[in-house]
Image 1: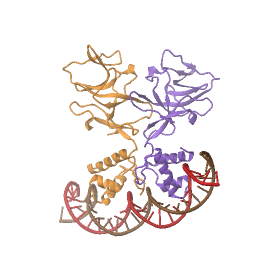
Image 2: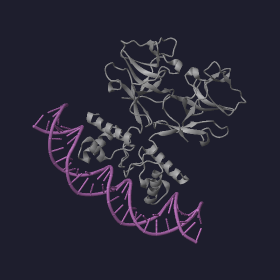
Image 3: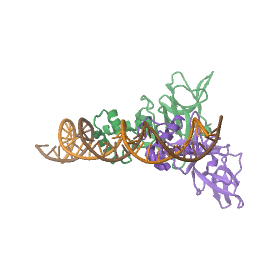
Length: 201
Length: 201
DNA sequence: TATATAGGCGAACAATTGTTCGCTCATGAG
DNA sequence: CTCATGAGCGAACAATTGTTCGCCTATATA
């Protein structure tokens, strides 16, 4: 798949996401800065042959996209330095209905530190990317370059990141710590049997 | 919304679900057993005016459906006698990506009997409708007309439905009990903050 | 130097799709 | 009875959309 082909697929998927139906050949031409519909058809044919796109014969606006839902990124090991949601950190995608938007992402839970809040090792947590978190809410935090899922607790004694497991100690936030809120917990998803698979990035 | 209008919307949504793009006016006519495209246009205009359907102007196959994802039913109080997934039991729908199919449904967890398996009161559990369940798997069962989510345990001493909470006792299955497997647990979803809402049936 | 491959142009053409315009029929409210 | 409304028919028409054909330009590779 060449760069140009990626751009085509991207354009088409975005169009479908934004409009709810696929673009016509002329709309693709316009969107990609082409002046001939034939160029677009050529491209679509090649993409279809390689299985990168599905079309339903000669039907108007019959491109199916890979799927009619939005792909929410699953972040893996977060690298210190690079913005959290940048491509380097993306491990894969999970597709959900349209109503999940761009500022959401998944994190796969690593470890049992939140097990008393019924969040287990291997669960997917859906987070909304934000800097604001309210007291006592669960969220993902970056502390000194490491990502952790904890309850945010603010007291007169200071700010703590609370685990939900007696085997773990609360993390007390010091002034010198490099700390940031990554997102608040929106949803917990546990796939037991052939549930959501991650699709490669 | 008249019965006829419901049928139209249904047809269109199913078409979109099955094909990934919306039907043309002539396809709707064929599907609804009409011979004039004008009849369909009339209907669409009325549906659009009432906000029951969204169209993007005069664009080919530009019906947006309510959303490009499949609606998985959420079952409420199950009535003894009627088939479990019949309309009478459906409390609402949750929309997920396309890859969830017709034999899946949600049940909203009522009570804490599975809390040690990290399934809490209010969680949504996605189940696959089946009669076969393996030993030690979690599933939904109908016992004497009541629905319950438990671990299925088969031993030489008999069949038990095991809770995951010390406050609850295992249910021992007697020959005289009216028992059936409703489905196996596929996924657990917990919406914390503006997650999936149920949309009315 | 040939040659394959990706990408592109423009114009004519065919097929699909949406729109419009009368006209009909049945039903329930006033 | 009259009138509004939901539902439908057919045919002509306009607009959109997909297809085809020949030809062009790079670039990389054998």
